[in-house]
Image: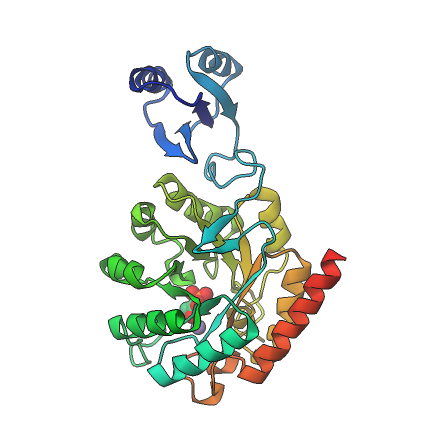
Length: 335
Ligand code: PEP
Ligand code: MN
């Protein structure tokens, strides 16, 4: 349950509200959020308690969202979240593409990617410097060197950076170089890492865990929101199902479902969602038709030589073709 106070309360008036709420349940949390003073409680309230809270001096409104994802819910915020990353809007249908290799491999590779994205008018370059690989013997990423490369290339070609953070120990290092921080599927429920993101003034791209249910995914977003960071982008990247024909099952239905439950921007990643470059275009278009706010896609100058995720990376011609198809579909959907 969420209680908001009137704006411009004095510190003492706010303290009185907090005290009155703590008498109901001392597990409440409070936050200054989008300019509102917000108290949230991990309980459902009886009608009598609702009447009592409403009568507390300074209280403005009471909201009744699902208990485990309050700040990410539509009950709390019915208008869709939209924010700027540098001068580029994300959310509420401001469609964006994020493209680039799975991993930053070299300056030369990233030069080629950056130049091609610029030519296509894509705003965001992706590429992992820290790679969470299934095997310790696989390429682990260039680490700080990789962060420097992707930043330099982005600045040269007028792009914005999205890259993954895998652990709290490298969070400050990653945030220095990136514009958006990616939390990968494997870390979606690393709650200690999620809580740290509250103190970072950068948007967070929160991928769905590979076996995460929707309320668990929104619960993960709630960790970041309730720690004080309101800029979150959700990304459907495929889940594990009984069917092993493709790497993952892209849950396209999650897109309209998330839009019903939450105000947060929702992207789709058809590269990880299928594991096969052949199916990226149809699944990207399906995700857009389903209402996503953007697409993340892996692209590489030479996918056959990629150090990770080559089979699910587009080459440049395929990326060009995809962006044309996306433009056409977006035009048709707006018509
Ligand atoms: C990635 O984006 O390269 C990645 C590792 O994604 P995910 O966490 O979705 O597997
Ligand atoms: Mn990848």
